[in-house]
Image (tube, rainbow, N blue to C red; front, side, top):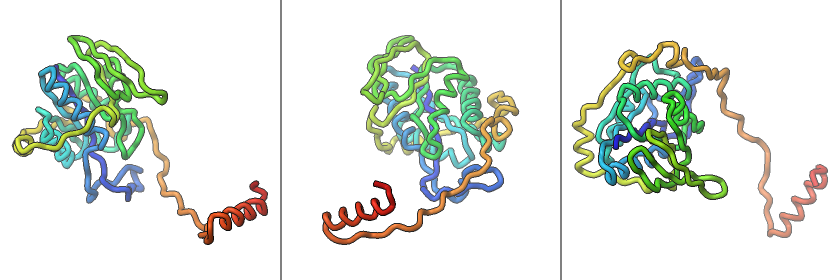
Length: 261
């Protein structure tokens, strides 16, 4: 059973800065972490390997510093790691990112299950996982909360819905996006840390994966961001003092004066 886990390194901050020329995130000088939802994907990949054998390969696309995210994944139990790093990838939207990752996966060739976190906290689009499956032309199951059964060429899972969950069966290979309800991520082991420190991480460029230059980075991104700005802070407002009855009476009076109620 060969499992691929796609992860993303994201800024560990709410103070997001934007490059005014490219309208992309400024990552230089910002502490980064593994996208929290991807930690559940890593854990589930390791659990599948522990139960069914095989190996777990973790993949990410980003600048050279994204290697730290891969080493963290290896310290948790992943077997191999691949970093897609090339200036040609810079500025990619979800479509171009999905394309690049799918090309890397085609280069790997041998896989049964691809696992992604449900979304990244810096973009919140939840588009890359489904995008990868579309480029690879394989089934996808999103918002997976439990893997019930895996057999050769077959998987059955529970997919989280607003009403509860839906049981879904699929052939393999398949792409899954997982939610936090699926497991509890483990802590890195000493053995894992030692392996992560010494592991030779594969670093692939756009040429290495055979990517079409017109489909990657900013040139290959159909999404155009015209402007990004921080909304102005709301002004006004006041603190009302007194007991509950006084505050409610005063508030209702003001709302009536303004013909709101």
